[in-house]
Each structure stands twice: as C-alpha cells, then as structure tokens.
Amino acid sequence: MSSMHTQAGHLKVDEVHGIVTIRICNTTRFNAMSLSMWEQMARIVAQAERSTTTRALVLTGEGDRAFMSGADISEFGTLRNDPEQIARYGLAVNNAQNALSETRHPTIAVIRGICMGGGMGLSLACDLRYCTDDSRFRMPAAKLGLGYARAGVQRMREVLGSARTTELFMTARTFDGIEAARIGMVHEVFARTDFDQIVAERIAAVSGNAPLTIRAAKLALRHLAGGEHAPSSSEVDAATDACFLSQDYQEGQQAFRDKRPPEFKGR
Image (cartoon, rainbow, N blue to C red; front, side, top):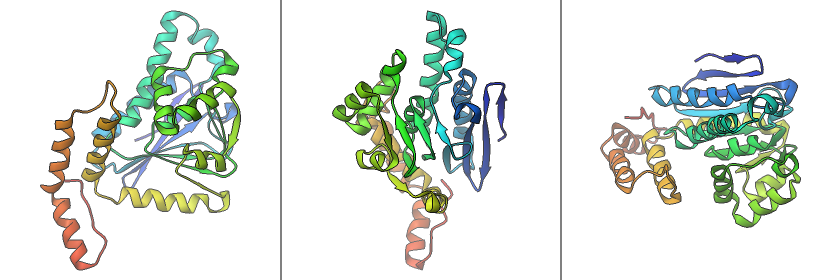
C-alpha cells in the first residue's frame, strides 16, 4: 500500500508485519479531512479488507499536534454548499466511518493532540481508541451551525450513552484525554512519555490474536447493536462455527499444550 495525495492533504498508508497504518496528513490544518480524503479512506479500508496479510488497521494523525481536527471547513463554501454537494459530502463521511466499523479487521485509533468533530466520529468508528493525557476532544457542530449525521450521533450514543452525548453536543465544550478515558471516549489514556511504547504493545497483542475469532466477535457485536447494516444472526453463527473448524483452533490448543505463544494464520 502507498500514500494517496491530494492538494488539500493526503492519507499515508504503510503496512508492516500485517499492521496497516493510515496516517491523516494535513498538518497546516491540524489534520483536517478534505472531501477527497474522506472518499479515499473508504477505498483504503476496502483494499485492506481484500488483503490476505492484514491483521489490524491503525488510524492516526501526522505529527504530535493533532489526530484530526474534523472536516476541512475551508472547503465548505465550494464543496458543501448546495443540496447535491451536501449529499455527496455526507455520503463520503458515512462511507469512511462505516468502512472502519464494518471491516473484519480490528481497527485502532491512536490519538495525540486535537480530536474534534469528524475526528471524534472517525475514532468512534474504530474498535479500540488510545490517547495521550493532553489530547483535546470536542464536538463543535453547535458552534458551526452544521447538522451532524444521524449515523454519527447514533454511534456516539452507543459508546457514550444518551446523557453524555447530549451534553457534549449541546455544550460543544473541550475536554482532555483523562476525561475521555473516564467517560469511555477512549479505552486507555497514557502520558506522552510512555504512549508510543505502550500503544505499540497493545497493537501487537491485538494483531497477534486469532483473526477469525476477532471477526466473529465483531459480527456479534454489530448484530447486537442493530441498525440497517447489522449482520444477521445466521451470519454471526456461521462465523462463530468457522472458528471451531479452523486451523487456528487447532493451533491454539497445541500452543496451550506446548506452553508457547500461538501463531495464528487466519484460516
């Protein structure tokens, strides 16, 4: 995989040992996402979905100042200004978030610095989220006068609950990484001095686990959450049964008997 460039920023993609890192690169705008970047995100995830070597997707921002500051507001006057443009923009955002939430691979948001608006939405589409203690979060839609898509509100409510989602949308206040962990916006928060090492260990642990088991668990969670894209119960059951018929199931048992780490192949 390689970088995808546009004039208004780009997405840099690297794969090392099955870990695909998608880096949001638009540092002059605190890694704001342009329309073309939203559209590319879905394509990149789809490419990883077809890969036989991918074990995890990691989403992060270029540099230490920002994960993602939201959609690139400088484009709104020309690319989000009439019903047709608004529909295209909304579809691009929705497709990017759905791609992350629906992929069979585990998805991990690694957050340093600013994570606001669409950045919060994109990170909430990931399975796991880690941040630095000095990260800053905000849902500023009410300060901009824009409407936030129903799917994004629903995903935020599923993670944070109705009361917290209501408060964050209505106040549009900023909160730090420590509070983000306390309210469930992220799973863990670390000091910057320890962040890279600990998160690398978390990513390695996830990517080393049995892919078919992770896929079955993700399908079950999506089924239980419901919604128009939810998998059926039969699809969940088939994925669960496939785990027991896999080579990885045999490898897991053998590794347990041998008292060694398992080497899963995803088959």
